[in-house]
Length: 120
Image 1 (cartoon, one colour):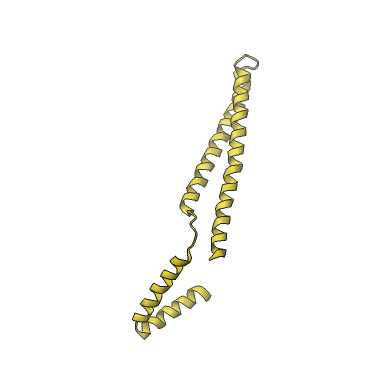
Image 2: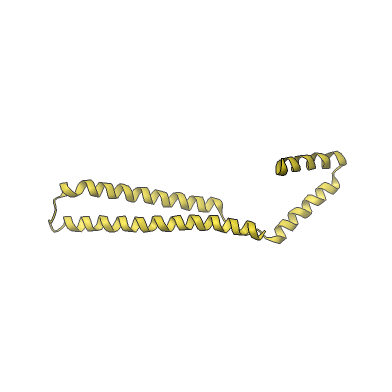
């Protein structure tokens, strides 16, 4: 279970790392856009010169925002929860009870499917 939990947490950490990188890029994009607006206000540059760059940065910012939303959704759907020993033991106990109450043919069918799925 320790390995399973470590795998779950490493996958979540990978998403968090990607999110942090994108957030840094988004902050940089907003800063660049702000500087372009600041350059336009005092009349240093005309809007026609800045418009293509402003449009490009706005598109980049929108794309980065969408990427953040996608990662957040992925993190929610993947919902990392530690696998607890008590939970696994309860499932194993339930499975044992079901198999003990089943007849020979059902147990044989289960074991055949189980081995085929896991080892076949």
